[in-house]
Length: 183
Image (cartoon, rainbow, N blue to C red; front, side, top):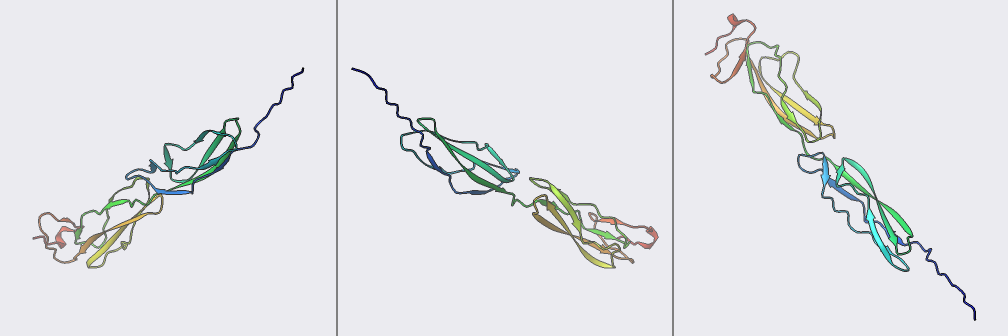
């Protein structure tokens, strides 16, 4: 008699098809997304599947993140695929305009509005003229966040080069008090 050893080796790679790309918005008041549902890849093997894993972070940043899925079969053969997770910031910045202004001068220094955003502010601007005309001008303040989201508010500027009548709670500035009559 004699003995012969026959060794059968599994070198066939498992197969894996990633879940579809995922697009989500940032969490409220955050610049990241958590709790993202990735789905489940489709896997198969000629013998057996040992494990299916991914390298997804617990919290995804703004933009595209590539998640690599890995399937390992019972013989140690490995296959991978990639899934894209896109996080977008659609949260508008907040803006609170300064109080309306009543003035007896047409040159007015405006105070910036109060602004905030979940990801950061890029620009605060307004459409105010360099010299205000007599009468009421609406100044529109615009805040733009770092991801291009925009919010606005309106501030009224009342200019009277003659008499100014206001109530006790109104802010009034004058360059020459002799020109103003406040009642």
